[in-house]
Image 1: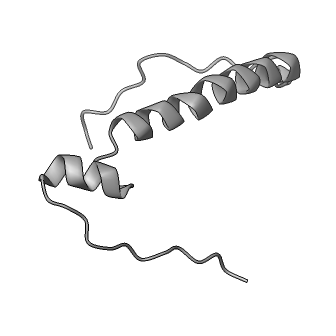
Image 2: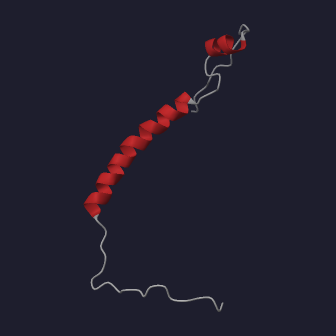
Image 3: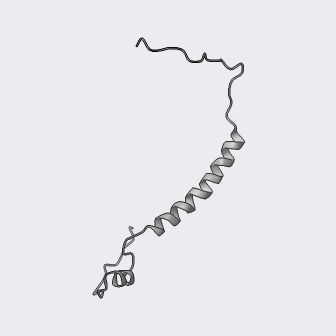
Length: 74
């Protein structure tokens, strides 16, 4: 604890700091417009699952004998 020293003194601001609402809104819209579709494309590009019987046949080289139908929740 003896090696602690003040490097630079703190200057107290004269007026309060306010958020820049317009800038935050614009950056939020741009960020959402880029990250939403970007995530969609990335997850589709990196999808390694067998989502269709044809994809399973092509990937495994084996015929599909049957599938289990998907039932929506009521």
